[in-house]
Image 1: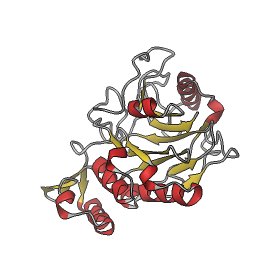
Image 2: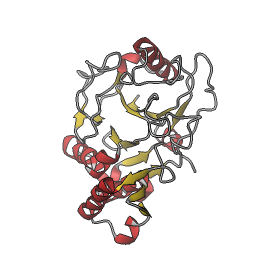
Image 3: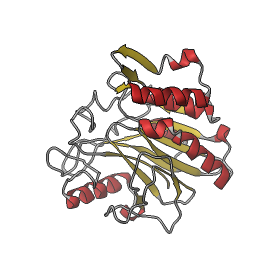
Length: 285
């Protein structure tokens, strides 16, 4: 069953953004908020119509901030809690304290710089990462009450940002991987994600480093010929998360492809690079 479900009470109206919470987590873990935004229900104009949440895509900044405020209001969270980073397709993870709460929500200059993931144990902080095809990775340890969020494009994936996030949760807050739950959110799927030999080579190195068996590799990357391959980033991240010690029964994986569903999501690849951004969010209430 698809874990990311459109909230039935939220329709693309003037005031209500369409959001997709992680439904199984909302039932099991009412102490957190977590999910993914859509492209619907904001004020941005084309080609960012309408719920663009990225300040770095040459949209009108005031429209983006208004959209971000709408998301906060729809979630019943204070806008001052929403915390952003400047993402660089790396694997550096920030430990977010109350001192960093709200950074980047209205300005790129005030965002956490050069970070592609966060963890926090503080209540009231909402971690936000931006996406338009890359893979959002969510983490929650209900024992230690720690949340984490990571941005995994192909570069972050082969750098094993999932392992970096889980390791920081373990070393900083005492989380045990077997206690952690993970979710993999809407992103470009294997149906649409064609890569070249340069990317494929990096993926094969990641397979080797993670000791992923050959038969499982074949389900993740498929040779199309002429130096082109179809890559399943969602499943590659799932395997890396499992290799880090998270139980397979604790992992939720979306079936939603951002490239297939441009009616619902922005897609950098499908829309030729001129488009908006969704956010993944997670926080302790």
